[in-house]
Amino acid sequence: MEKSIGQVRKMIEENKKTASLTNVVEKVIPKTLFVIAVISILTTLGILVTLLSETVAFFKEISFIEFFTGTVLKPLGQNAQFGVLPLLTGTLISSAIAMVVAIPIGLMTAVYLSEYASEKVRKVVKPILEILAGIPTIVYGFFALTFVTPILRSLIPSLEPTNILSPGIVMGIMIIPMVASLSEDALGAVPNSMREGALALGATKLEVTWKVIVPAAISGIVASFVLAISRAIGETMIVTIASGSSKNFTFDITQSMQTMTAYIVEVTGGDAPAGSTLYYSLYAVAMTLFVFTLVMNLIAQYISRKFREEY
Amino acid sequence: MKGMKRMAVMTKVKKNFVSPANIGTLEPAQKSKKVAFQTKELNLWYGEDHALKNINLDIFENEVTAIIGPSGCGKSTFIKTLNRMVELIPVVKISGDILYREKSILNKSYKVEDLRTRVGMVFQKPNPFPKSIYENIAYGPKIHGIRNKKILDEIVEKSLRGAAIWDEVKDRLHENAYGLSGGQQQRICIARCLAIEPDVILMDEPTSALDPISTLKIEELVQELKKDFSIIIVTHNMQQAARISDKTAFFLNGEVIEFDATDKIFSTPSDKRTEDYITGRFG
Image (cartoon, rainbow over all chains, first blue to last red; front, top):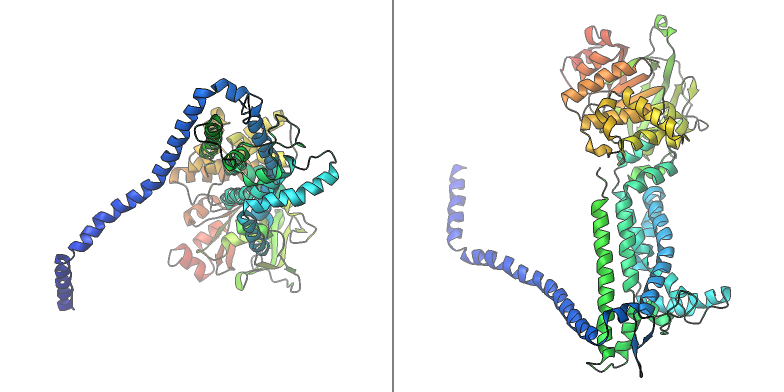
């Protein structure tokens, strides 16, 4: 036995002499990985720089105040006006409608899956939810235009053929899986000892769920809401297809409105000559959009850190 | 967490074998005290695993009953059947009967919420809710419909005093209970339990996660609480059982080997296995 140990030691020593290649690889690999990791950061920075420089060019022609307080967006023809408010209201209204649909349904689904559903039911429902999350948004757009809008129009006769209500609702359906799955994660992370503690006080299942488990998971739940809003703000296809392109400044949800994203689609599709105000307006709108979603994501992060319950 | 989902479903009460053999029942002379819990031929299975075997015990009011025994002998399972928390595990089957104040708690007509309002529980690991100290104590009264702020204030103070922690937390009632030490958290959990004024308090190794000083405080508290509550305490610590309990039940492999006055168990146990266990020869 002792002899064999000596042999192994010898072999290891010999291998060490020839292992210089291994050493080189060990040193090179981390650097390579670092460079690859930096690529995504550089891309983000590149996008940001492009956005910023073109936005600055835009604000040389149109004043900041005119852009953010203007209620008329008329990018073509003479006397072009670039007020972003019609796009802002379009975006905010469609997102608000989406949240009205997604928050209650998503949260109820999460509570059901986490607290009530049996293993069997969960095994069926969760994959279906995930399929819902995987449907391309253009399909949702068609669904809004050709299925939901006709139904809504039979209920609300004054509804325009293209309107903000229908894509808002469909966008809500689209983000239900996101709210449900993130909220379910948050509920599932609440330790079982909380449930036991509350049940042992004679609480019913409902009292345990709404007065202990949901409050304990509230940071994760609210973060899921904020992320879902940010997703709704950035959503493009559904609103482009189903809400038309009238740049109405209105709060009437039965009318056609354009969102920031849909405006970008329209203008990029319309051959705006590079260097024109119309062309630069794309970047200004995109920058506004970027700031919105960035702020939303920061809020989500802040909430989930700040209100994290310690247990 | 997943076990929660099917609570209150799987318990099957088989009443087909009732025999009057009462191994654990005490001498008639001691029966002048009121019986809190009486188990009759209690058997419990986790799937195929026979965890409790023919348990016949009479547990008296206003006493401290200690349950001792090696790990996996069914101690915790036993006290969790007394407030039916054991039903949270989906594969549990129960036969026999448990009477609480002469009523069968395994009967479908006995509402489990009522039972748990009367029979409180303190867990092995402190499990306060992630809320303020005040909200932790007020939670129980609130879910049972007490809304008056003044009454709630009184309940909170009384319960915290009862759990001997008022002086330590009175200036920080609205801070999160998780800011407290483990021993303080456990006393908060006891106070939370006292707030709904149960008759019985089940304690499942309440000091196993605590340091010696916190343990001592809880033990003193148990002595104090005995005046108003019946206490059933599971413990791994035999000195603890000897110090604080009036009666001791020794469990082994799901059976009650011996149930008697604590003095007797620790001085002249009648079963060889009890003696082996308390002298540390196994377990």
